[in-house]
Length: 171
Image (tube, rainbow, N blue to C red):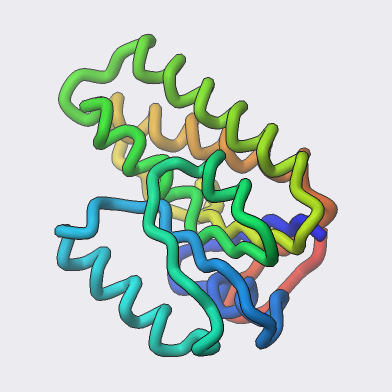
């Protein structure tokens, strides 16, 4: 089972994703900003507090390696992963084709790792069509790249779930 769960901010998508794996032991992959980011650390702590105690947390920007983790895996969230990749490469300061190419390569590596998985895997992402994206070059690149991430990930998944206001629509 490979499921992509998408929706807007605060839609309930993370909670829905967690219910898909039930209470069985799982690895929760937090692929976002650095551990010294106070907002990110608070988010991870809140997720950790509500998840089953048997779950482990893996904070990494290496999504392909995280998807090689044996057993059930939940990745939350692909938008945070993309932000971290763009931060690591300085896209916000100087958008360039080289940065976009590097991120596209990472997307392909992650999708290849996802397609090879046989254990239950749930990936959470933000639907770029449901959010406000700044109308500047970096904002448009982020939207376009997250659209690519979402499309490529969805193609490697068995199901896509859209969550709006806590309601789930299986696409």
